[in-house]
Each structure stands twice: as structure tokens, then as C-alpha cells.
Image 1 (cartoon, rainbow, N blue to C red):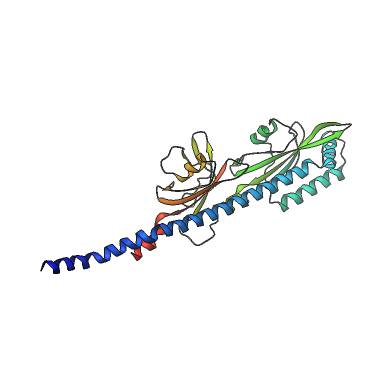
Image 2 (cartoon, helix red, strand yellow; image 1 turned 180 degrees about the horizontal axis):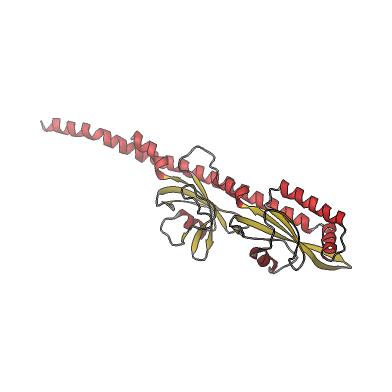
Length: 291
């Protein structure tokens, strides 16, 4: 009778023990695969952002090195440029705006007085003034991602036009290149490469003692450049990302307080961090259901 009882107990425990063994054996492997996928997505997003920033920086440098353009703008600022020259500058910058999906292009005098505006923004904003006060007026200055005067998130490049005469250089004027984050940065960051109900990419940065979410979030609308958490927020992957100068992985709780697996990676030349994350339940849920 006692043996029969032991047999009954053993049979009774077969199912839960087998289920536990399945989770124990395959759970770590499933998590490793998920982390590898998250790291791959983060690397891809970072490379795309770095390439885009490099292209825009190069566009700005080409304008800075255009001596003929600097001469024309200098003459324009002093009332010496004729109408065909002004029209030629406008046509060239309008083409560049379309080709590179710029929100607007402005031509300014050395005193930041507008000579020409093409596009959606037509005024010199606070960010332009801040860039003009940079340590080296003769180099291109790129702004951080900020809210423009109309409230939209964007970036701008302040390009000095340098005129050289008799071995002397002077600032002949500036060109301001502005981009709307909704035209490239946000779509690139927010697109998830596979079908997933919870997969999400975040673009974050450190602001003082907080981590700020730069892009629009999948599960919380209207959060771009508005939502932030303290750097010491326990188990928040975004906080860990801005604290770390190198890529990494983490299991934690996201901005919804939901358990996630995450990978993060810095964007070279910026204070940005890309965080890719997916819900823990989405990764291990099928395994638990199988068990």
C-alpha cells in the first residue's frame, strides 16, 4: 500500500516536474536569443542614426567651404548682390532642402539678420543665437534635439560662410539648416523590424539628474522631450543606458512598470542612447504555456 502511494505521488509530480524542467532548460536559451536580437536591432538603429548625422554634417561642411557662396552672401548683406545672384542662391538652397528633407533653410547676415528663408520656419530662434555664441565661429555647430518655436521637435546646423581675402578670413554670413524630427529621426527609431506587440526602440539622453525620453513612445503618446525619470530609478533600462558609456543588456522595468528585456547602445558624437526592449512575457510566455 505504501509503495502504491509512492507511485501515485511520483505520477502526480511528473507533469509539474517536467514543466519546471522545460523552463529550466530552455528559458536561458530563449532569453539569450532575445538579447542577441535586441542587440542586433540596437546596433542597426545606431548605425543608421550615425550615418544620417554624418551626412548632414558633411552637407553643412560643403556649404561652409563654398567660397563663391560666401562672396555672394557677403555682397547681398551689403546691398551689392544683383537679383540674378540672389535667385541663384535661393534656387540652390531650395534644391538642397528638397533633396535632404530639410524643414527649412535660412540665410543670415553675420549679425543673424535674415536675408532669405525657405520652408516652414522663417525666424531666428533661441537655439540659433546659442549656436552663434559657440567657442569657434568659423566651424559648423550642430544643435541638440530640441523643441522649435512652433513646438515641433527638431535640430539645426549653423553653417558659417567664410570669405577669404588677402589671407584674411571673415564671417560673411550664416546658413541655418533645420530638420523636423518627425521627418526622419522618429520614424527610424520607432520602426520595429519584426511583428511584435511590445517591441519598442527608445532614444534617450541625460538631462541633469534625469533621463529624458526623446522620441514618441509606443505606449504613451505626446511624451517626446516631455517624459523623464530620475537617473536612480530602480531597474529602469533607460536610466542604466545613460549611466553607461558602453553597450549593454539589462532585465528591468520600463516606463510602464512592465518587466522587459532590453539592450542599449550609445550614438557616437551625441549624448543619445538607443534602447531596444521587449516585454518579458512576450519572450517567455510561449515557453510557459508549453510547460
